[in-house]
Length: 160
Image 1 (spheres, helix red, strand yellow):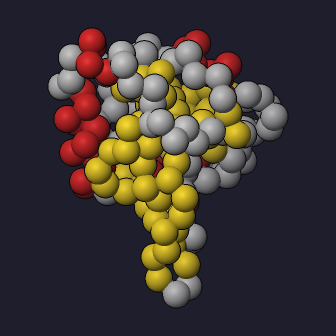
Image 2 (image 1 turned 90 degrees about the vertical axis):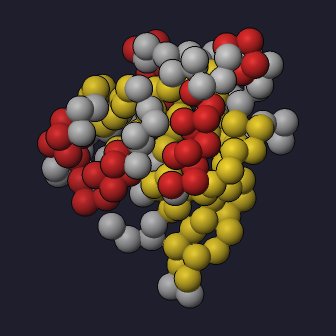
Image 3 (image 1 turned 60 degrees about the vertical axis):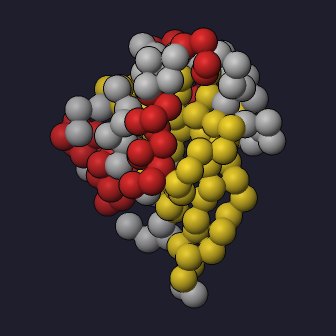
């Protein structure tokens, strides 16, 4: 059973962070990497039982993997939530055997972006990656077209 650590980078995201953390129920551990927030971000993270790590504005995401207790890392933005279908996919993932997931390079998800005109499809995004992942675009893994596509969506909200 491959447990999951979620990593969420935040900077003054107190108004939206709770919604993101609430949807991370399938995760066994949540790490909030705070980049010098001056709002309620840290209080919200503590309310959800997250482990808090401080980071400079430019510190690399990969450096925070060392503190994760699990081999698989889910990267989520504070403006995003998992749909119930995606949560179910992650629970199914967790009952997979270690030998089955060892062959998977990473998992991608569809992303729906909130706009003034409604929800629009954004590009797929690789978000569930093994601890040794080395390809990063800021705080998120670089998209890998060979990633397994999980059912469900990440919802990216425009406003808190």
